[in-house]
Image 1 (cartoon, rainbow, N blue to C red):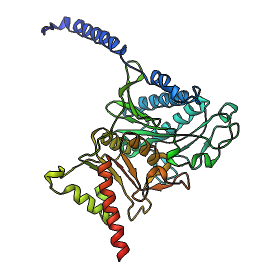
Image 2 (image 1 turned 90 degrees about the horizontal axis):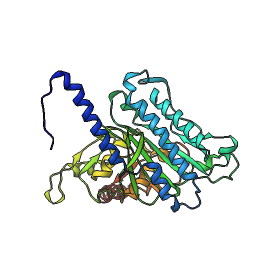
Image 3 (image 1 turned 135 degrees about the horizontal axis):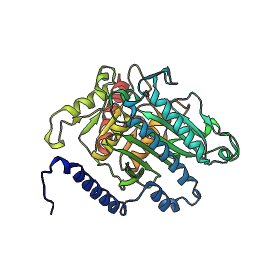
Image 4 (image 1 turned 120 degrees about the horizontal axis):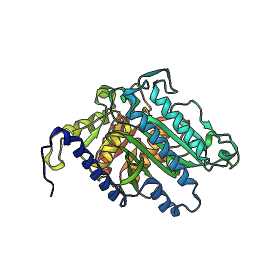
Length: 371
């Protein structure tokens, strides 16, 4: 039994010390039951007999870079790392200083792994080739958005990292080629994201379900916290930037109105939740059930999200959790990439909600065809 005692001031610091020691003891006890990311990878690497530890090393290095970025995100308000860097990336968007830092950290970590022969990121016009002798023998290439949601950096909103891993197509021992990166999403061997929020989580899949690991800052390790994530088959959250409503096509507008209508049988109206960081919106809907929509608009007729860095990895994760991802015309993972920075529309989340928005999109096309 714990008794609450009002301590004289001279005993205050002693009380704090005792409480902290008790907390530390409990943490040690709890640690005996936890599984770290590295332990989990090692325990499950038998599912990839051809990897021979290479794949495990690659994921470990991604986790290390994520910890470094997390450290800088957490202290970003205290150092000169916030704000614009004065340049724009290949997408024509203003780069933030933290964007550049994250890009550099992941490039360095993947090169140091020795099992990755090249990397394509949102921040670079061309793919990055690791040309040292060790990296040329690497089996894997990585596509990633080092810091998703960078427009939210200055206002302390959750941001993230998205990554996608493929086996190279070019011969081992040679430099990575552009066609190594232009693979369909269904050829991914792994994909994941790291969300830097109230807690930092790494969520990934290797095609055998989705698992989430939360960073324990007391030991500096990602620990298994969400085993075999399954997204609800239906949900009540829709996530879309409704500020672009006038630029949406008729099918999307009708779906938004459907979400806002009152209907007790289908638990409508739904709840609108839009953060503006893809990782944050996807993570919430993955756990709670919902749909994320980033459709084509008048200003972005091909959509705005990048197929290789954002849509493919997110689609792989969502499908592995039991959800669905489509461009409105085709399953995301079946789209043939034509360029490194190709954009596509994205509708993803709980399967029934994605099916419903597809109905509206199909109906719109039928009406247009008749006209």
